Length: 287
Image (cartoon, rainbow, N blue to C red):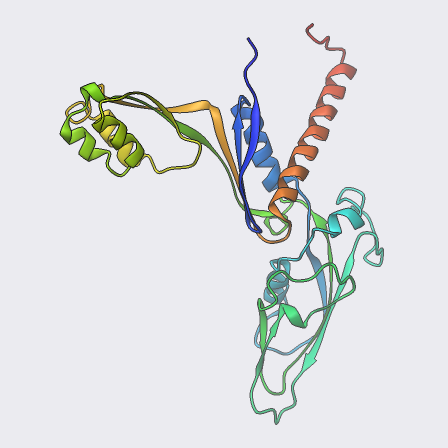
C-alpha cells in the first residue's frame, strides 16, 4: 500500500520557512536540507584589489570582512551565470561579476573618525545591495584613506561558507504520544502539565493518540514517559519517521521560499545526472 504523502507550509516569513512533510523519506528531506547549505547559489565578494589603505587594519582582514557581507541575491540568481560557467571568466565579464567600489579619505584636521559601512560601497548592480547596510568594514581615522575595488559573483556553500544562503537548515522528527488516562496517576498528570492538551485528556481518563504537527520540546515529556514510577504505561512517546519538519532560516541573501525551491530543483538536476551516469555505465534499471 502506497504511503499517504502531503507537504504543507506551516509558517513563512521574511527570515524563516517551516515545512511539514508526511510520507516522504528522511533521506529525501535530508538531501534537501544539505543542498540548501551546499548548492543553492548566492552573491558574495570573491576578491578585492587594494590601491591604498593606511588604516589600522591590514588588507587581508578588510578583504575577509568584505567577503562576509550579505548581499541581496534574489534577482542575481536569475541574471548572472552559474559559478561553473564563470570558473575561468575575466573579472570584467558583467555576466559573471558585480563590481564594487570604495574610496574614502579623511583630512588630517578632521574632527573625528568615521566607520566605513556596507552602505558606503558603490555597487555596479542596484539589485545587488547589502542586506545589512550598517555592517562595519573598517574605522577611518583623521588622515587615513582607503581605496579598493572588489568583485562579487555567484557561488555555492560547498565552495566557501560565505555563499551559504541559510544560517539554519534542519530536519526534525515529529513526536507521537499514545496515552491511556485510565492508567494515569495524579503524579503522572502533574508531571505532564507542561503539555496541557495531554494533561487534560489524561485527567478525563481518555485513551488515544496525539500526533503533534509542530516542533515542541519533548525533554520533560520523555522524562515522564520513560519513568515507570511516574507514568508507567499511561504515556508512551515515539518519534515518527513518517512525519517530518524542515526548517530553513535565511541569512537574508535569498527569501526562504526561494531557497527551498532552488534546493529542490538543484537536487533534482543532480539526481538526474547520477541516473544518466548509471545508465551510461550499462546498469539495467529494475522494473
